[in-house]
Length: 196
Length: 196
DNA sequence: CGATTTTTTGAATCATATCAACGTACGTGG
DNA sequence: CCACGTACGTTGATATGATTCAAAAAATCG
Image (cartoon, rainbow over all chains, first blue to last red):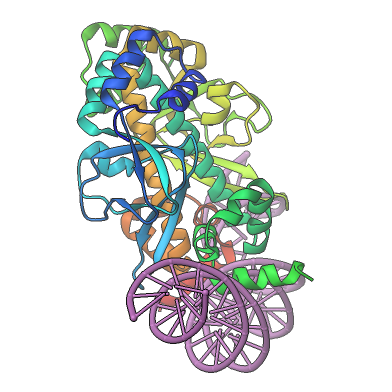
């Protein structure tokens, strides 16, 4: 499963943002490798330096932090066509505060910090690509803060399941509750309401 | 006040992230202009396309959104050495959801979308610079979501005033309350507590 | 100085958390 | 393939952090 990297989805994704020369694709294919992982695989652990960046081809990752009370607070999910890493740890090569873990068996593309640096040096178009996707992610997270502040937990859940109906089925409810910022009990009560 | 742009703070900031050739600085100086604005100046308005990116040399900007109830929800502040724009609107050149406004008389550096594109084409090191600072901002916003979820309003306020004691003095309390995600009344009550 | 904006205070109310108990599903080994 | 144990989901009672509204007090600005 390491020999024929499934680059196609990534290349298509990149081409939505920048134009890629054939040479760039070649460089890309030597630097990125694909990886299939089982559910619950931990890719990067809080306290250790995060050396890799992950592109989800299929499956789902979560990024979480351990709270003071010892719970796992989910900060972000990554599904198809999303990059995930602990940006702070990856970029500064300092111990990360977050843990990254698969919540489904997943098919990933993986690139290490050193490979990425070499890749960016050879294919500057990708520097722009990565800037653009982080800008999107940043925008989305600011909008998310707006919703967290201005909608009730129930409203956030209903909006989320309207926007991502399939996803709500895929992950356990307690993870959804954590991501949306309330308790599993509360989510259960919300669901009980509309289920008549 | 338009003739001698005060580039120095920006150049120092850029050099924390990437190395700049003299040629890059020259290009920079032809594309960026400086601007002094009075308090309450609106730089970019919700509903209109955001054409500029702002670097704060001195002063303070806020980015806010109008809530359903007609309030102004502050999503982000920018002080010295911060870039601010509505990234989504600026990048896609689509109507913005946020408004950007000065909260103090401020000294800014301003660059337009078209100037930035030309600048990035001529000085690719800046592509990397802008990627790195957005990554930082994104990381910070994820950490912020963690704190919003896992600390009470009171804890968030105390932490914030421990981290930015001068800043807490600078902006009106109702803005701080909005940024921290609770009502001005509640902030007043928090302060009343420890003030004996 | 007066007028407007900002902050404070108190009482009633609401959304969500907490805790504990019970029900259900699920996957692993016998 | 069943049984058991563990993980996950539900329900109800009680507790709490934060909101709302209204009004008064304080600060700021032209």
